[in-house]
Length: 298
Image (cartoon, rainbow, N blue to C red; front, side, top):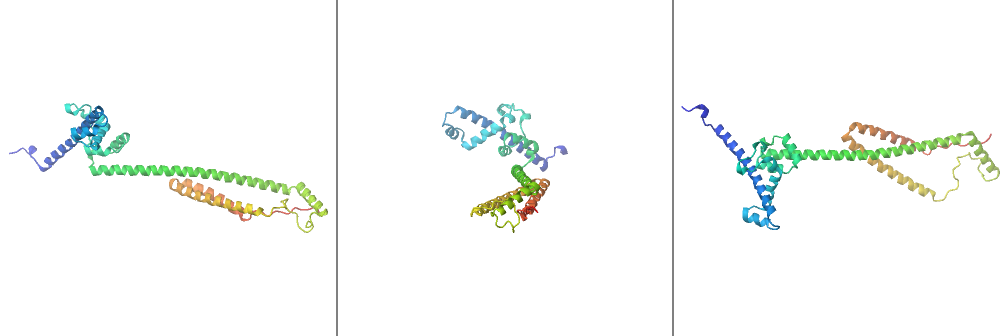
């Protein structure tokens, strides 16, 4: 009666076939690497222009096939084989568990990235289709990462531009406030009021100000203006409004990008911008402020 331990079963036969297939694929990769090494050696010995002819006549390889085999040797040779497999002295500890097809697919990765990919994935257990999908997923993840970094860099640049713009606006507003305070202080100073009132009365007595006795004193603005002065200021107003509109569009774009990268920082900058816009809106609502008339001597 047959020993059950030696009984041949379909499962056992399938396991043996799969093992032989795997070993054959590994041998195929080792053989391809050795062929690539010899092709590279022959190419270095041949004269310029003889390579293609030698391939066709001597080994029946196309140049594309030869280039692929030489690339396999360049990329895997040092780690795949310690010595030639022909003399049977290859070091199995240095032979990666890759098949020929897997090795070809992994050529698409730079050497340092290939090492990382092999460390992070059990490539040997993957089918060809699974390995192709894993490589595709890796490429998509890298593209998404690069895009995110690029968007972050753009957002940081736009934020820096916005920051500088806000600093400039803050500085301008501070200067305007300072100028307004100085003007108000000058106009409410008793000495200045008295001097200007006396000057106005003198002018009235001399007949140079026919309306001085009926019209209130005003700030010392220029009373003589060129007929087309308004054109210059209208053009300036239009230009400044366009600048504000362009800056506002850039501001909203920066806030949109920042919202995707750092919502908390976006909200901080939005409040900052909103505060500035509200101040500008309130200031320009009744600009210029009404000028107080100067009081004459009683």
